[in-house]
Image 1: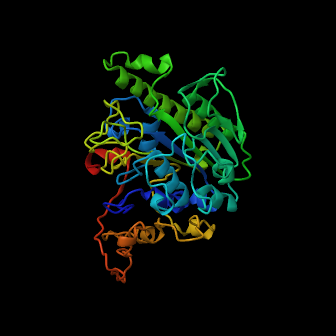
Image 2: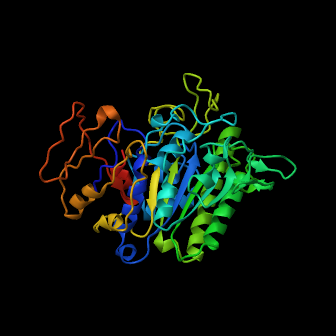
Image 3: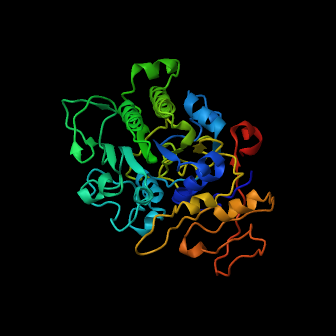
Length: 424
């Protein structure tokens, strides 16, 4: 199926995920339309290389992610922001980070600012329609002031690090940036496993009378040291120490996602859950210029043919061409009317000073539902210089007048089994 999810040159179309997720879920299955709203599990990897998953032809062991890709949809023109904080901010607000001062690097432990409180967030919007919300993992959207913490930004539950200032292995004897809700706690264990365990616990104890939104933002594979031996052993033949540890961290991440999926299945929630997986940016590789954000001397990640890596605006840094995966019951079959999402009063996060930069895909899907094979286009994702409205699926045709008209090219959601001939 051909669906134009982003325009070439636009970055961070994760900003439109709020409406896209719910519309995908409702449009994909008549069961979801007739029953309760879907649960949503959104998984963020940290600095994952484009080719470091099996469904992109990589050699690392990612059986869970490969199964999700095989049964769901791979987003073939999906872009993140080049840094962790930027991607989180864009995803949770639906707006470009430049609009509220988070466009430069990621927040550091020394940072005293965060996501402005006037920005309405995705969990706040979901709570308004009855969702229970939880965040596990690295927050990175403000830690110095309590008003920036997850509990004050729409999440009912929080478990993890506010500033990302933790080692891969926690020790009870050490003081760490590790919280449960608003309280600092001391725990021991491998962080990736701890986060997966808590996400599974949240699912296991969830009151199913309300839908659930869980965002799990892991620290792996960016922090690939301290990986347990069980994950390292399958890579004992990899000669490079950094690559071996990184590969083990990728498999640990895949195992964590597997634990979450297993918890959903055990609870009987899997068939009514939309699972989304993406990397917050591309894999870390040496760049030409120092960025000041965890620069490295030699790479452990593999971004394939994509140029450069984390911190770069090239595709290697923005995790382009398919690191986004959506899985759920028939989630790749857009054969139902997506207005079900609209009818359930799902809206973009509103902002007191301006509109959302993202856009719903509803009109485009309406064209696809009618079997329209015509070239479909999309309006710009909100940059002031590119805000023409493209209406390729509108039989009236045309582009609304704007001084900065930019031609849009079609992209497509691809099924895994068609990968060889449909992914460039």
